[in-house]
Amino acid sequence: MERQNLITDVSQKNIDSIVLIADRLDFTDVQILRKFYLVEKEQPMDSQPYCFPILFREMKKNGQIKIGVEGFRKRLNNLERVGLLKKIKHSNPTIYLPVDDNKEVVRAIVKRFFFVNGLEKFL
Image (tube, rainbow, N blue to C red; front, top):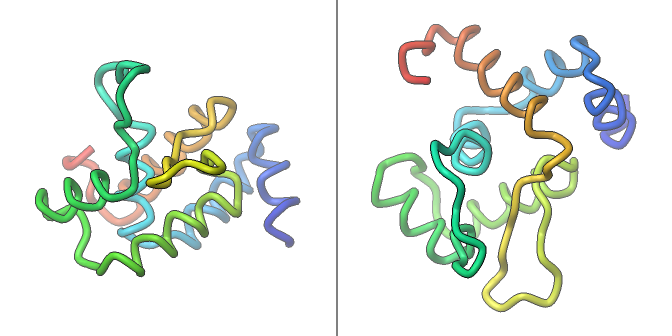
């Protein structure tokens, strides 16, 4: 199944597609998605909470990721390519945002990943 078809099915809340996407993600991808979609409070619009260098530094400092800058950039680009994140064009430094239409679906993907791997107490 192609990635574009996969996202189309997910946006229709097809459970099989959610399972398929969750099975293709690893812990690092899920940690990145958690940062975007499982936040407790709304971020102020005048700040850049998802600015690439700040996001990388914060996730690295908190031990949420154990990869380098380029690996992190590739992960974000891959998540953007499949439609789970959106990239603000012509922003310097690069800004990534969650896709509003996918919030429920991505939360389901993250929760499924944690339950399947026995990590539900960390949600």
